Length: 107
Image 1: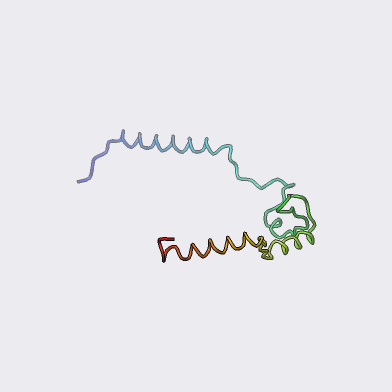
Image 2: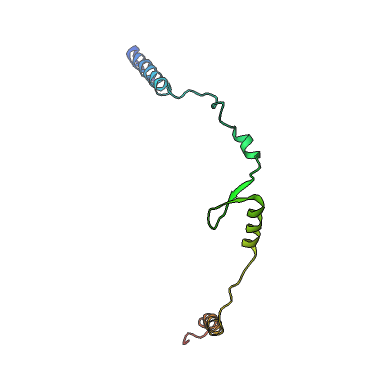
């Protein structure tokens, strides 16, 4: 059995849909889709631009491309700090203790 809607129901539904459409039009009025300003460089061009200056990750000072490359090479090379004799022995004993502790809980 289909419901029998009155003409008044259809009029209210039409009025509501018109109000929604007008409301959306008013909300979207200030948001016009337009091209960017002429002085703004497009993102596609910026992605292909070669960067010739950089900043140091350590101090933030400006560097040339060659200086930046040499600094990156230096930072990529592993450097292990050398400890004094007693400190190196203590570190080795602590590492040994960490290995033996699960095996011998008395340690």
